[in-house]
Length: 289
Length: 189
Image (cartoon, rainbow over all chains, first blue to last red; front, side, top):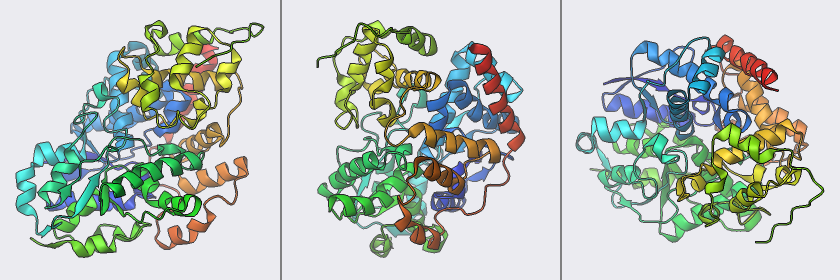
C-alpha cells in the first residue's frame, strides 16, 4: 500500500516524535508513505481565524501537488487533517471560493484528493487483524484513556471520522494491544489547541479538566493522535502542578508510540524521550506477547 | 441572560456582513443554548456563544466585536457540531474575528491576533511554520518575555523544538498565496 504523506509543520519541530513513530509503524506494517515534494503549511488555526480564502488556499496548494501524484493523502496531525478536509469541502461546494483559491495558487483545484487520517489507514486498510498478528508486545491490561480532541471528529459532515461524540478508533487499537480502553467522558473535549501561548490560562484549565478526568477514570496514560493535544496535555501538566497545585503525572503518548512499542520497535526510534512527563513506566510495562 | 444594547451605537451592519461571509441564516437560532453547554470556554468568558447569536439578532454594533469570547474561542467547533438547527456557529465566530480585525476592535487579553500574525508571517517567509521565530515575535509584541522560559532548557535538551528554520517547502507558492489574498482583500473593500 502506497500513500502520499503530509507530515505537517509540527513534524519538524515539536512533534518529531509523532512523525518518527508514524514512519516506524508504517514501515513495520508494510505501508509506504511518500512526502509530496515542497509541501507547505496547511494554515492551521491562525489561517482560518484570519481569512477563509487564505486558509483554504494554503491547504489547497499542497493538495494540488498531491493530485499530480495520483495517490491518497495520509495525514497524521489531526489539525492538518481537519484543515485539508475543510479545504476539499470548500472548493468542492463553493464555486466562488474555488475561483479565488485558483487565483491564489495559480491553478484550479477541484477538491478530489482523498484525505485519510493515519488511524483510518490502520483500521480500514491494514486492518485490526493484521495489526494484532504483527504485535510482539502487549500492554498487559494497562488502562489507557483514548483522547481524540476536536479536529478529527468536527465538523463531522466534513471529516466523516468515526463517531462524533463517542469515537472508538484509538480504543480499538488499545484493545488489540492488550490494553484496557477506558470509558470516560472527555474523549472529544477541547484542550485549547492553538491558544497554548496566547491564552495559556485557558489551556491550563482545560488540560487540568481533561487529564484530571482521565486520572479519575483510572488512566495510566493517555493516547492521542494530534500534536496540539499531545503538547498541551503533556507540557501544560507542569503548569497545572505549578498554578493549581495538582500533580497529575499522567504520560501522554501518541498512539503510534504505543503501537511501535508493541510492534517491537526500539523505544529510541519512537521519540519517547521527547515527552515532558516521563513515559518510562509505560515503556517498562509493555511485556512480550 | 440579560443583554443591554445601547441605542446610540450604530450597528454598522455587522449581522449583515456575518451573513455575507458565512451564508449562515442567523434567524434559525432559537436560543436553546446547546452551543453554550458544550463550549469549553463559555464558563471562563464574559459572554457565551448563544449570547453572541442573540446580539447578532438584535443587530448590536461595535460592542459585539469587543467581546472577550471572540479571542477565547478555541475553534473546537463543538457549538457547530451540536446545534440542532445546523448553524455553523464556529464559522460565525471566524467571521466576527475577521470583522473585528478589519475594524480595529479590541484584541483582548493574550492578543490572539498578534499570535496569528506571528505564526502566518513565518509561513509566508519559510513556507512552513517556524516555532522559534514565531515565539520570539509573539513574545516581543505581547511583552510576555518570561512566559514558559523555565521549560526551554528541557525542551532544548530534548530537542523538542527545532532551532533551524524549515527547509524544503515550496516558498514561492506560499508567497504567491499571501500576495494574491492581500490583493483580493484590497479589491473587496
